[in-house]
Amino acid sequence: MSAAAHPHPTAIGQRELVVLIALLMSLNALCIDGMLPALDEIARELGAEGGNQRQLVVGVYLLANGLGCLLPGSFADRFGRKPVIMVALGAYALFSLIVATVDSFALLLVARGLQGLLCAGLMVAPTAIIRDQFEGDKMARTMSSVSAVFITVPVIAPSLGQAVLLFAGWRWIFVGLACLAGLAAL
Image 1 (cartoon, rainbow, N blue to C red):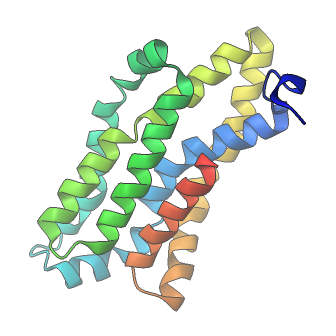
Image 2: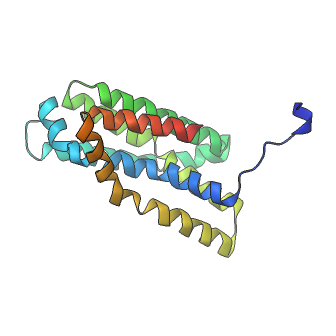
Image 3: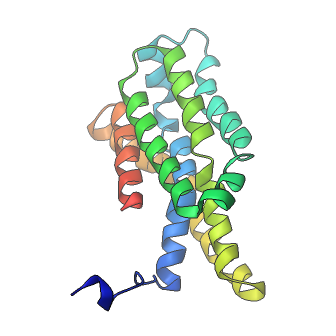
């Protein structure tokens, strides 16, 4: 068919939108909670000295992600929601692969910080999309549906990380996260 036959791309349905938004928002939770079972192995392999130092892998990401949430809203208003989401997904995949290949704990922390900062758009832009599409009760119901999916991810993510560790090393958790970001981008 010609491009003239379909002047506008087909819009996705509400169910698909909820699944996509929940997936986008869940990527941050997966990046935090999916690697928790591997913290000891990561610290040991990369030479983290103190027992509590390994917790920085989570703390640095959370801090950077929280600070990063100040920026994507302005960019999403200026350039659109999709470009912000695509940049955040690209950064998520890129830094997941960087984390999967690091050889020092310091470099791991830098990569996790940059990943958290650049991936903040995965929390901000999807919420803005819901607000763009719906109003009032419909918006509240849609956000509730997204939240119902999103809230289960921190519960199951450590089990997913543990499942990866049964068959491969901790680096494969981050390779899997990069693949998931690629799937979300598609």
